[in-house]
Length: 71
Image (tube, rainbow, N blue to C red):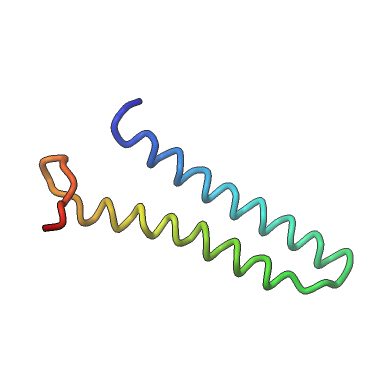
């Protein structure tokens, strides 16, 4: 697998999954008048956290391509 391909696939999956979940929740709310805020909060926090961790990994990575090591 090429370097960075897994990160790109993970970002695409997280964005698509959050969009699908948002559309699904809006459909439930429009048909049944249920509140889906708990479901959306949990879903967006999990997948948003994954995107945040990938972003921080990319920001704090060394420029020579190796990861930072804890001492």
